[in-house]
Image (cartoon, rainbow, N blue to C red; front, top):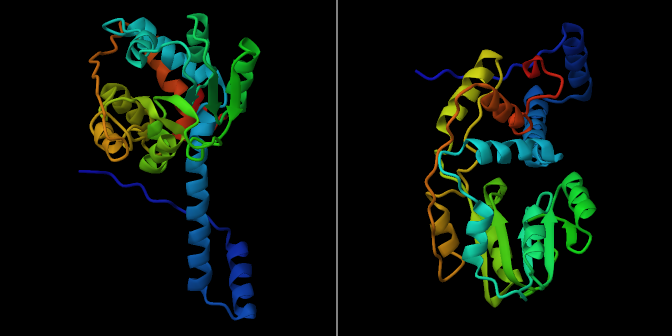
Length: 278
């Protein structure tokens, strides 16, 4: 049996009386006004949903918590940076754009490894880009929307999109935008998760949210994941290769699990002042 939670609106009696009087005075139908109110509400919900990602990555602490969790508790130690570099097969002079660059650590790593070509990091978070610019002033850091890249056609040899496409409202349109910016001989490297990544943590998170009467979360990777990513890419790019890495997180005590779930709070629309943070 599934449990459905309804949205309840609380309106004070006096306010309701004044509202009805105003409707009567203006000769308006309640249904018309209610329909408009619902439309306004839905627009607000969609706007807040779009800002979930911005809030989640407004500071690097939450992202770093999840990165550190994988680093210290993975069953098999996997260095994703090294795997990505291996797949890029760089010659050293390519122009590279990383979309969703966060604090810019990967591009800085490429530069440290001797890459001489132009490097650009794009992100929508001012805080992340400020951190990136503070640590590396030689790389170009730009704030922008991944769905509307501010670059000319055939501008880059490579675009890197690591664990970010599942945040996009229209994944295929975003990838088409990437394709336009990439030179004919260039390529896109994208990484993502499985649609069933971390099922135990998601289950625990939902039980916690349910206990506090908050809406449950759903997997954030469904729009672009292991199960559908290759097919989506093939709708835009003629040749697509795929590498699958199997791994697991193994915990021996509760603290890292609590920290991981807490790092997800912004994306779960949990206010900063809620008692759940205690």
